[in-house]
Every structure is written in structure tokens, then in C-alpha cells.
Image 1 (cartoon, rainbow, N blue to C red):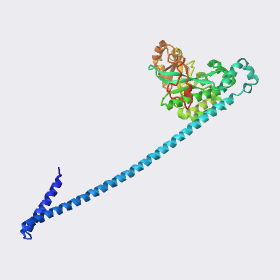
Image 2 (cartoon, rainbow, N blue to C red; image 1 turned 180 degrees about the horizontal axis):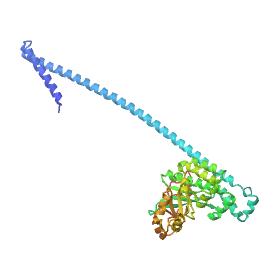
Image 3 (tube, rainbow, N blue to C red; image 1 turned 120 degrees about the horizontal axis):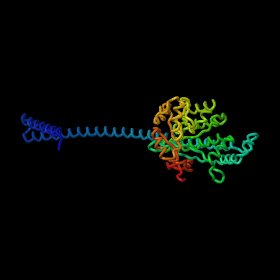
Image 4 (cartoon, helix red, strand yellow; image 1 turned 45 degrees about the horizontal axis):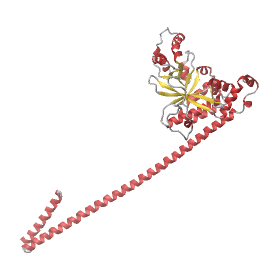
Length: 406
């Protein structure tokens, strides 16, 4: 259906042709037939002129569209070049990250090599009175030293769960050594021997190395789980070992939210100025501390808060008994501190209370009345070894990092 403007134009041309024909006839310029033929010619000429004008406009519109298409094509080409440039930048960044990871792996391997060199032969590590004092445990010390030198160090993890939901919030790490036959050495046996031989720094560093590997794997899977990593007072006070220890955690300070260093209550209370200063330096990098093996509740919570302690672990039954003890020590009357206020007492100093050694449901019921946020114990999961493939930087993607074998 023609547009209204086209109909008006057509009517205008017909009107012009008719006026021309009537004019030719009226003024006697030509006979009637010839006049109307001339009017038809005028109509045809006007139509051709209009058609030529319309085609010109269409040609100009088409040229404009072609120009716009060329401009759009040029812009698209520029965007493609920009995208290609960004892809090249991302590829360069990935290559740089790969090189950085390789360098980190090389550095970690150097740490292990250095630890093996430190272990050394027994005769170089013991002499004089120290050798005589350790004579009764000489076999254990040699076993520990040989296990460290052979890198037969396993990492075990035990879950720390939220209460009452019982969802895993943290893991606590434990070191286990194996002798040449594959027998697992009990912590009581090898810890005493390692301290006797002055090897606790090596044990701590190997444990830290394993924890960093696990945390790297977890963060690579976007899993927000922190690990408690034990560190001895000897390591914190060792001015030869600690600078290397500090350098290692400085290189991994991005994991400060995922690594929590744990020391015993006795070690915290007996720490010297050197250990206190070194803890402060670790706290400066954002790392937090946990106090475990709490034997009494006469705690200086203000000092703990100042030292960067953010978690305190106490056995469930001991915590129940400790409420009355704390009231006595702090000068409160019996019953002045409600059971549910104990966690709040720690919380006011920025310290989360974790009840450990929960072995049965009856104890859990009593602990829930304390409004404690976290629990730990065999009831929620025993310490289990980390799968070997998780400790391999180029292997393993399963998020289940703990071996399920007993």
C-alpha cells in the first residue's frame, strides 16, 4: 500500500500535467488532443525527475549505511585487537604465575634439603654431657633423625567443628614419623627424642611445610578452611632457626588467614623476651595464635589478646571444673559466673573458645550449655593422614583431602 506522501506527489504531478494541458488548449497554443498529449509528456517528465531524485536519495542513504558499516567494522577490528592484546596479557600473567609457583616449589625443596642437611649424623649432633644424658634414648633419637633425613614425615588432620551444627570449620595438624619399617612413632616417643636431640626446629619446619601445601591446595579449590599448626617454644626462641622460619612465612603471608600457630599454655607462660618478640613479628604478618593444653584457668586474657592469641583450647571436663576454679581465683562468689558466660569471657578479649577432647554425647550436651562455638574430639573425627596426592603440587584434585582408612 503506497505511502500517503507518494499518493500526494502523484496527485501533484497529475494536477500539473492537467493544468499544462488546459493551458496549452486555453491559450490556443495547440489543438486539444495535442495539448493533452503534451500534458501527459509533462507528467512523464515530472515522474522521471522525481524517480531520479528518489534514487539519488536512496544512493546517498546506502552510501551512509556503507560508511557506518565500515566504521562499525573498524571499531569491531579495534575491539578484537584489544581483546587479543588482553588475551596475550592474561597468557603472560599465567606464565608469570606458573614461573612463580615453580620458584616457590624450588624454594620449598631447598627448605627440605636444608632440613636434611641440618639433621646430619648422630655423632655430629651429640657430644659430651649431652651424649651421656641421651644415652638411654639414643636409639629413639637415631630413629627420629633417620626418619627426618628420609623425609618420612606424615601430616595428620583432625576436624574442629562448629557447635551445634558439627560442620568442619578448621583442622588441627599433627606430625607423625615413620621408622624404616613403616611403623608409626607415637608422638610421646619422637617428641621427647626430638627435643633431646635439638631437632624440634626441623620437625616444626617440616610440619609448617606440609600445612602450607595443604592450605595452598584448599585455597586453590576455594575452600575457606584454616589449619592449626603446632610450633614449639624452642623454635620461637631459636635465633638461628627463626629468621629462616620467619622468611618462609613471610613468603606465604597471603595464607595468614588460613594458618593458625598453636603453642601450649606452659610454653606461652614460659616464653622469654625473644619468643615474645618473634611471636609479635609473626602477628605483624597477620598470623594468629592458639593456646592449647590449658591446665589452669588463671589466664592473663589481656596479655593473650595483646600477643595475637585468637583461640584457646581446653578439654570439656576440665572446662566444667575450671568454672568454679576461675570464680575462686578471680574473687567471685560461687555461681557468680554462669556456665554460658564462660565463652563470653574469652570473647570479650577477641578469643574464641574451643572445647577439645570431646569423646561422648553426654559431654557435648553439657558443653552446648556453655554457648561454645567450636568443638574437637574423636566424637567428631579422629586424626587421619592426608592423602599423598594432596601433597603433590601437580597431582590430585579431589576435595576430600583426608584418607578415610582407619
